[in-house]
Length: 397
Image 1 (tube, rainbow, N blue to C red):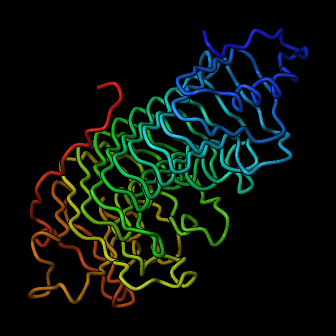
Image 2 (cartoon, rainbow, N blue to C red; image 1 turned 180 degrees about the vertical axis):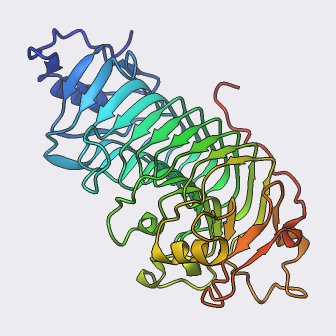
């Protein structure tokens, strides 16, 4: 196979190859469009970042538990693997213990990440790299059948991108399991999302070229996301309360359906504005940024447990005041912020409404009133929005 390594490994008694780094670096530098670079089974040590700049290259291992790239002694470079190319495929290998982000893809299109394991083997730590799989400013992204553990920001993060499919992955022990930020047209489905601080995040942040919209989060198993937040102070995800299943923040046109949400100790679904975040004052918000979540459609999900031990003094006090010692917050929590310029008779117009069905009463935390008068309401949210279109990008057809 073109690009396959035939060098005799130089292995230690525990099977770690100490001499493969130069070979792979050379292959990546010399890669040509259409090339498949195969990494044979083994455990390989790296002390610097890998970089690829050639379009239409596949980097393939023998399996996520058979081909392992180890960066625990990394001395240079901000990532494990940095790709600035289109038509890139990474599959069937593991990357462990990078100093910073594990795999970053910047400004490419037709990106496929398949059967990749990213792991910080010491467990959740603030000193772990921020992102596991990290496409940013990309188009046509497929992330499937991957495993990510231990990211101090997001295990799978797709930012400022469009036409995204994230499916059949397992994310655990990250601050955010999966995060879609300032991105358009994303389908996130059939994932196992567990033991993170927050399971799936759909965010819009200010001061970026354009806002995101059009995310579908469906048919996921989102359970026991109760890991204490270990993000670095000042980062956006540092404000995510432990025990959050799905968090929508300042994003529009989001459809959440068909998910199984279980035992997320704060709330299964949190719908919030930029005003409710702990990082709000850290940024100068550019004119034109819309801080409100709008056109949110939550329906046909299955809920059990959860809400019994919310994170943070404010949420604990809210639960105690409304539901007592033995009570629990309801499945869906809304911070209560809506754009006053768009309200008609005190409500958002139908095309911008928060429509929440099959979740019982929604808890309005009354953020605008400094959380003094929280209320429960089901009727207000009993509406429907048109279903969002599926993302059409899929290299497998």
